[in-house]
Length: 288
Image (cartoon, rainbow, N blue to C red):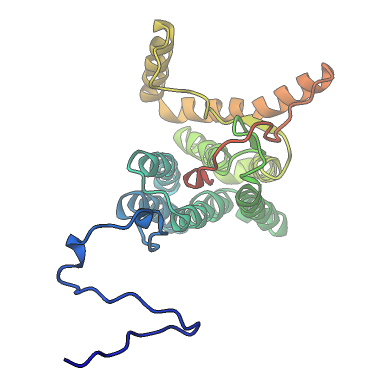
């Protein structure tokens, strides 16, 4: 039988013999073969939640254009819930990916950047002319800058704090005010300057260095005192009684808490540092 020479690569080294594709999966794996980088793919489950949040943002824009501001506000609150679930589901199912992190940021820009700006503009700021759309643009630009800075500083910022007001909380302040006033049947044109101030506050606070507690240190797998369970149940009960009157004050308190902590630490001579002091693994699914 003829003996054909084995194939060689460009450097002259002999290439290994090709295996039959039918039986390749039964062959013994070489040590270290599992360490090779896997092909990049798109995971369905976490990205489905991100797509749901993106749809809620789009739905809020459509409802705002149709003057259905209550539906628009609730759509953004639903987007907040879905946005909080996608990263946790990715960690639980071990399906984190760089694609999911980037997709989450783009969805957040629509749901918590463009949608709240358009909602408050259509509801109250339209009658102010140029000042109205400038305030809405400041909020939208603040959300974009906030998300971009988070993506670039994720490896150096202390995970206990957010650098600036998180975009979902800023969106909750804006649409929470709209939802409360709609529930009280107060026309938006009568509160143009209040809406102007709220939009500027939320937009500018997102790009400040004011630290906001991230609640990432909470470990729900550990035992907690009974009072904690009672407080959580009390919060859910209060929200269910009258959501518009409860949600807005909660997020206003959170929005002011960062300034309170910042100035209190400054008065004590110990400013809060948001620079990470301990090396921790970077979780790409927590981009926001």
